[in-house]
Image (tube, rainbow, N blue to C red):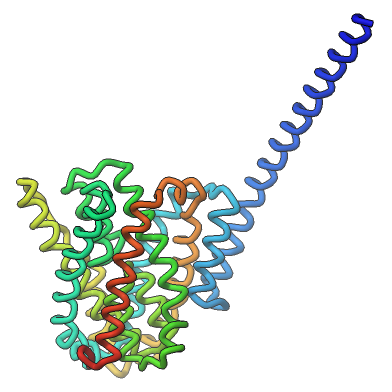
Length: 342
């Protein structure tokens, strides 16, 4: 009986080991199949996004689905390409801007931008203390919300002595909220019957990254795009005093690089406004800019992963979300009341 029992036990163990080996082999094959298909899906998605047959928000959703479902085999290349393509797309979109409208928007929006940044920095740092978020992480998230998302974080992070984890958490938090804003802002604007001028100003004051500001505004209308881009670029320039102030507090010497693509964007707007003979060319360049932006948003979505979402954690995400809701709600209320506007 004992011998028979031992044989049955050994048989059961062998069977379990065999099942485990088979399951392991199937898992390895399944992962290999996913990795092989991920390259095909990536390029097909990028081609569709760049073709202009889908909207920018849909391209972002497609990228997010890809990033969460597949392992991106070109993660580093995707990050680098999205940065370059974003700048090129913004410059190309400048060929669709009327400089007279843009300059009027910039002069009017300067005061709003300044007050918005100061208010956001004060509230953001206060919320960080209240939620017990690490000081540097709270400062980075607040800077990204106040100015221009990932660009501000990337610029001020090294000056603030942020480590890799703090940079990752801050960028992840801002990016998640930024992606949500791109999807929901046009729907909110339409539901509240915001004019293009109102929506352009609101998106520039309340959305983090330039890519999502341009994407949301482009979906809403041409006038909204012109106002949103200009006011947003005015916010981007605040990277300079932010970096200098942070360096002074940290007692560091730093060189601040001016974003050259902004100057090219302005030059493109000048050409479109004052050289009507090139109207057919400027129209084509503006269309290419929209297609490039759509492809950029797909690439940005592909950069998201499950591990990145888990690494963000709930405290920084709650901090960023609360700050974003406060800024977006107050700016929207002031715009609808007519206290700020054009």
